[in-house]
Image (cartoon, rainbow, N blue to C red; front, side, top):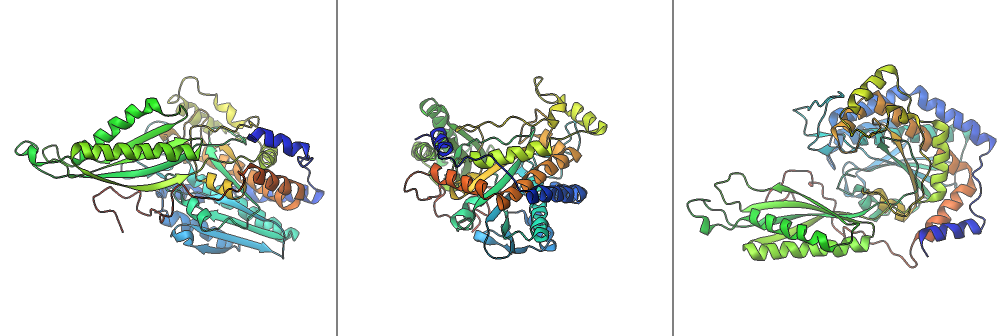
Length: 492
């Protein structure tokens, strides 16, 4: 039975009841909104500090500590270094005995190789090696704001239950959440909420692409490239031969497949035959089983390239993540709350910034005023072109999320334009939209038993029969060194 058919069956059982809230919940929602408004400038400062640091995956020491400090100050109990990851943590607030357990996800890693100042024109920061081109400084801080607002409501109202904020490092290719899922940190959670920066406000029930990555390391023999080339065996030749074969393979894979790579090490001087070279691959497809099959074919190209160039090759799986399991019940609640909160309204100064930056976007980019709009909710079993380790969480527990307009409409993630807008009040305002929406939805989950039961029922009916979780990355330890420079002797 396909996903939409299952949802129809859920509706037919009468479990898809209209979302209702008690008067207490409505009053509580006003309290939550007021808290976030009153503290918006504080959380904006926290987010911009993390923007300045721009720490990459598994190395987000200062960013993680800053978020933990906010939670400790608010009364949460924090366990850090979880799942074998120094920058991962779980912050917990419990009120009374029993009640539901609700989790909120927070990310805070930056992307290497892209920097930009808080400027609507291209302005590289030469001394920085990374930038928040995916807005995770806002993601982490906004989620913390939502968690603290919800905790304050629980404390004031006497609501019974447990609230958890999961600090999840290295979303960008490091799959930090997968190790946390594998270690059972989500086993006793009833529902999880998350969000992501974007150029628009939406709460769609969509999937994503499963994804598996690896670094392929070729070893050869160095020699003088002109004086004794016959004595050398070029590791770079191995990489290039592999890449050529993979590019030929693209014609013979399912059309939804995405394969991309970068050469992370190719030698140091043209007159020295390189004895080490490395290429970093991603393989994506909507179906995790297809990802594994295509990945194994990529491995075969590496072995063939080594044979043909008389070099040796080995590879290290860096990450593997599933496709997101959408949850319509949660998405309806999130969309309702997002519609209540509303989008991002620009000041005259922000509109000028956005208008200038828009000149660097495609000519058909939406108008800057659309940042104030809430897009209609879309239900689709297919996802877009991206991947996220939120997916593995969604297979463990009912999970719902949203996107907020932290960037100028038309901006692509992983771009300098995203870095620029995310470093300004435009980014902060979108973060506040997300924090409010998550907090409101958390209140619903604590107070609306029907919503929680629908979400859990839907999640269970989405899982294949007799399904057992098997991480695509296997039993490897977290790759804490995956953002360090390539070399023949990986960090132990």
